[in-house]
Image (cartoon, rainbow, N blue to C red):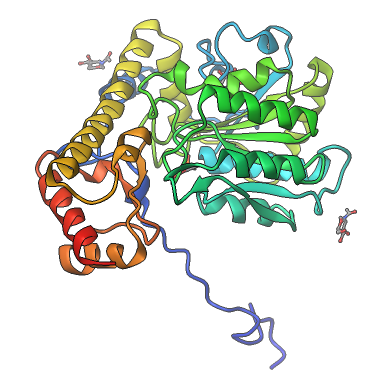
Length: 399
Ligand SMILES: Cc1ncc(COP(=O)(O)O)c(C=O)c1O
Ligand SMILES: *[C@@H]1O[C@H](CO)[C@@H](O)[C@H](O)[C@H]1NC(C)=O
Ligand SMILES: *[C@@H]1O[C@H](CO)[C@@H](O)[C@H](O)[C@H]1NC(C)=O
Ligand SMILES: *[C@@H]1O[C@H](CO)[C@@H](O)[C@H](O)[C@H]1NC(C)=O
């Protein structure tokens, strides 16, 4: 056959599966329903009423008010790096787009050029897309760094620091800014300081992924502590910021890639190259989500209302954690359950083993990942007793 074929044989074009349960990553109300933040509803109607808006293309790097939003929620209003004009941003398609643009830039230019061999370290475990985003950008050596201590159901700080000490200089590390997905376990401030010290000394590059700012503690500032600390230590860095979760704007694809450069001149050159990468990827970003975020952040009243909406979501998760732990303790379920409330953010590593997970799914129709990870938002005041009793049964009857 001489005709032009998409592929010559099934071997050339194997079928792959990219099945993701997106609701696994989303917030749900106590009724188990998606939640449109009231502030978002309000801002959408402001946007609809605004007759000055049109549907022209945005600039390649994004909506100016979005890129520079007065409130500067990732770095803080008073960031010296911002005052020194060495912080810039690219509006991206969600947090994933921000990671992708950052990865494409790093592979081309980081520390010289053509970094296909530079190791990129992602936490073990991590959000599974981290591996693929970096390898698809051309990095041939994406590896795990030690993070989760299954025995103690907490952070493996010694392992983490050990990997930082023994990896090649100039390696790239993807760090979860807060509310680590999937373990719900973040370093403490003291631990972050130790991590930063080794990373600085060993000349390692930090790429923060901030997908859940506000979800860990209910406070945007508290959740940005690690990012701001690294900036204050003088790191050049990238930070991928997603507004999917904290604005509930999942399908608008609104994200921000922050670039903290050495100086204003470097920033200018980075942004010019970013413009070229964006131009050949999606050309220019969509406006609706960025407008919602920018209008909200640029009005003190709407900003306050948004922070309150974020706290509503975080508080519901915190309440479910407290209740789940209390119920398991009241049932006398073997093992310790402190980790349920020690962990933060949307996810929890329950510590259930694969057999117990299978029991939960087959016998109880409670669906969770084989790793034992649950989305806390799946719990409601109506199902929490059933969930706690089912965990109790799984732990007591399945090895
Ligand atoms: C750790 C982490 N990073 C990034 C993202 C990407 O979010 P977005 O939907 O904004 O692309 C997610 C989404 O689940 C995530 O969990
Ligand atoms: C938008 O316009 C409608 C109709 O004029 C009005 O009822 C509504 O209050 C306006 N909303 C805002 C947020 O201004
Ligand atoms: C995007 O990042 C830049 C650089 O950190 C920051 O100034 C801006 O406020 C961010 N935009 C939003 C909407 O957070
Ligand atoms: C980059 O490095 C890879 C691996 O060493 C090599 O195959 C590729 O040709 C290089 N690309 C450029 C543009 O130098």
